[in-house]
Amino acid sequence: MIKRILVGLGGTPFTAVATQCATELGNIHQAQLTGVTIVDTSKLDNVGPVPVGADVYAQRMREKKLKVTREGTEHAISLFKEHCSNNQVVCRRIQYEEGDTFETMIGEARFNDLTIFGLRSIFEYGFVADPDKAIIKLLHQGVRPILAVAENYHPIKTVLMALSGSMESAKAIRDYLHLNPWPGVNLRMVHFKHQKESDPFLLNKASDFCQAYGFDVKTDLAEGNPRSDLIPYARDHQVDLIVMGNSSRNIIKRSLLGDTVLELIHSAEIPLFLSR
Image (spheres, rainbow, N blue to C red):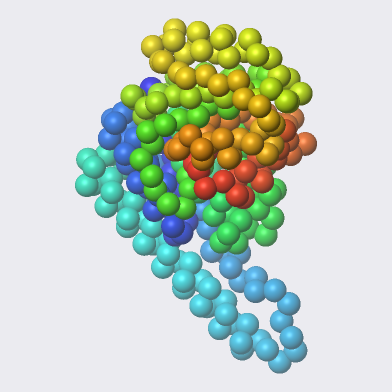
């Protein structure tokens, strides 16, 4: 069940996809949406080292950077409101950035069922000085589940659950089943043999759990290692979303299913459902 959705608005292509996914889910679940801007315009004054005599040029850079960012954010807000109106979804409010934008998002996420955000945009659009630290902070402080959208929108028809031997992996699957974001999708579950916590019997247990909730799931005990083979597996099976688990302990060690969560956010062109 989804009743409230938090959406990160940053004026990038990821924001448009996040908005589309949020209004789609809001329509399906009759959920209310809250938008929160993720660009702290007060930090845009930093244009790096300024050579002697280049103060005027630096000021022009600041003004241009601020103008472009504000225009992009305002466009994102306008698009968000328009999508909500067109889909007859309730937009509770827009929360504008104040100080640390990620602190704002952490606070807002406490009373929302799902946060939708283009996490990869943090790397690609320079919202913060240290993107890795910002994402670790979000996950470490309990902002989850997160739907990390890709740059391009695709309807969610096939969902892949990545099952490791960890408790966090099981919790992620449970969270997804509880929310059931897109009813009626095709569910697949993969467990790779060559990983530290490999257990071939896990698939049967997890499949039974899914069936208890009324879900049919195709299972696959696959050769390989999730570090190198999860994304290729997802592509081969035309997966539209990957469900993954993470924990504060694993995030700090930068390990997730034998790979780093940050690397997956960096490179994956498939949306990720990240939970604990």
